[in-house]
Amino acid sequence: MCTAISFNAKGHFFGRTLDLERRFGECVTITPRNYVFKFKTGEVIKNHHAIIGMAAIVEDYPLYFDATNEHGLSIAGLNFVGNAYYGKANEQKINLAPYELIPYLLSKYKCVDECICALKEINLVDAQFNKNLENGQLHWLISDKNKSIVVECMRDGTKIHQNPVGVLTNNPPFEYQMMNLNNYMGLSNIDPQNKFSDKIILKKYSRGMGALGLPGDFSSASRFVRVAFAKLNSVNPLSENESISQFFHILGTVEQVEGCVIFDNRFERTQYTSCCDTERGIYYYKTYENSQISAINMYRENLDIHNLICYDLIFTEQIKYINRRE
Image (cartoon, rainbow, N blue to C red):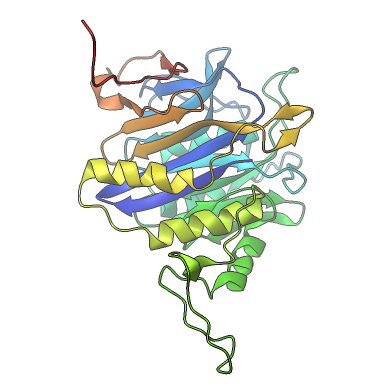
């Protein structure tokens, strides 16, 4: 269960939570321009846009959970179990395995509009990375600083949805998630007025009562509403650092506390939260165990080499002591 957002403040920021009961050995991964991508179709891309994001590295291949390229185009794949459908190869299309979609689009294109054109020619097929790795059932949030879309491959075809809120969670499909927001149009960030009846005097007794009814559970439909409300009502930050802080606070409204959701006899939790400054190529993250923000700047690396550049995540809480005894 995950949440992703696109956020315009003092710059454009893109990121997500990864809410699962396990880890996959993920690390912050920079794919330099001359790393060789080999796709199931046989296509080989030897030179491409540089990419930074969170990935599990398998057989020297970056399986990205979320990533941004050097032009600010960003993509995150989120669970869409039961609705995602990958069909058979189509000779009239560009056939890709689901795990190839992020690197294919980010290696070739600079903006969402280019991706929309490319997606019309792409067919996702159920081709596994290897015999031990099944394809994730996913849908994708694709964003740049001007636009966001959601891509869902279902039995009745590939759907490309305009996403005016810049938010994505999991099931149900995106069209329902947007329709469901209509149920909460009465919510507000200001104090409510008594519209219950003019025959009784009702007064507010607490701040924040304008948002009474905002769902607080961990379901994906509720998280969609909650993070959309937080994002769309958040104050526009005055600086870049404030923008980063605001981004993490917005996603903090849907963080999953270990113990609150049980799946397969294990506890789900927010394994990591990411925030990429898409204009400066800086990838920020926190882990469940470490609430300090860590950062990797892709432009401090040699982006013209052939090998992946990987940074292990920091899992130990980093606490700054203010008063020390010598």
